[in-house]
Length: 386
Image (cartoon, rainbow, N blue to C red; front, side, top):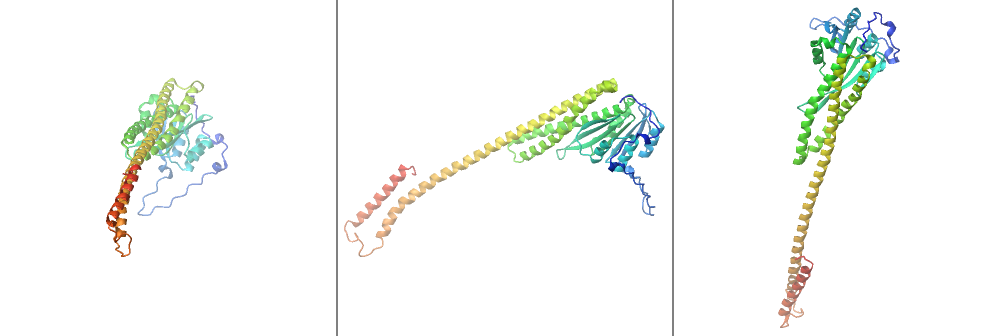
């Protein structure tokens, strides 16, 4: 892909066979109505999607077209130039216009339209299609925000289609323009710079997640009741982070495997190897975070179970002590009930009541009360109720 070729002026013969949904010719642009006296003039429809377009020759910017049509026209007039077009959430008509101009494969264009793709690297003839998942750490909500970036790399053009706030490609463009000796190596150099920016954007995310994991460990052993929810949410983010970083390892190794076949510049080879090393390191850290969160969740579940067991044990002991007290109270109540019963019977004072006129009636009642109370006391004592 490093071998540059002159751009042919006619483009009608290079058009691929499109699907039915992509073969419909774009509708002619509507003629805007004349603005009223209090209305500002309407802006071009493309202005909302084109972040920046520039034409480069030998690593130096030669023009900054204001529209896709101007970019196409100037690139045709500059056979040894390179166009770098940046789009943010483009419309279908804009993508179809780019596809017709640069002969982009319909499957790649369809992916760029729909977004929500997994990171991947596809080669369609002399064009590379790369899908990247960028990430940034948001300090206030302590969340990881993911963006999606699609990159088309051809012999003399680079097209970036961004879905989301990350990454900041304007910084990549500035850095490349400040090093024209690297930019003049062509579209591959731009691709590797974008890869490096995406991977470098993972470093703050890793640092933020490491702080979150340390705080979660402290909260777990402190017994914070909300820590389980925080572990679960961070684990879900690590799953997304893992999906963004793990495929990059294979993608970069695939690019490195094609160094000899496509004659990649030695400087770019070193550049890509450095990016691959960073990706491997980031991927290992993310795997470590996910395993650490799994272990923390297990420890938290164990601690919660132990705490619940301790509470249940305390409740059981309190219930046992309460039962013992109830036994004592019930025993003494039964003992005191016996003389009350006897005394109540003899307190009715019926004239024909047995032993009422007996001289030993009163001592007999006292002895009967004592015998019943003593018997109950001995029974309860033998059962350890007293």
